[in-house]
Image (tube, rainbow, N blue to C red; front, side, top):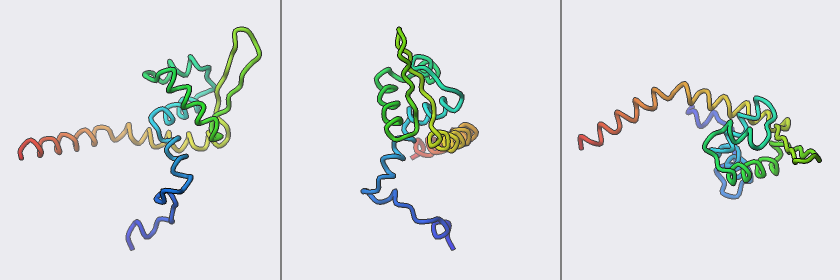
Length: 128
């Protein structure tokens, strides 16, 4: 029996499956980083932007709105002057963030292997 025979059927292969869009949101470059950062603690927008590094204000805003709409992020606007908004994970967001963090940790641990594979591939291509 092959590995693919052991895996349950999932709908993400179907172009009409709504899980594809959710998967895209939580695995986007900024989605991953927002979810992992919010595992640490709630953040204000400017703190989150500094924590993530490299994300534009526009992209962070769009990512937070998308994750909020999907039910992963909670936006808490405080009626004070100046305005204060805190972002935190919902229960659904916490579950997703733990799973994504595990993948991120695995990725960091495997970087040397990936770099070695890239070097082998590039070396073989140069020899052709």
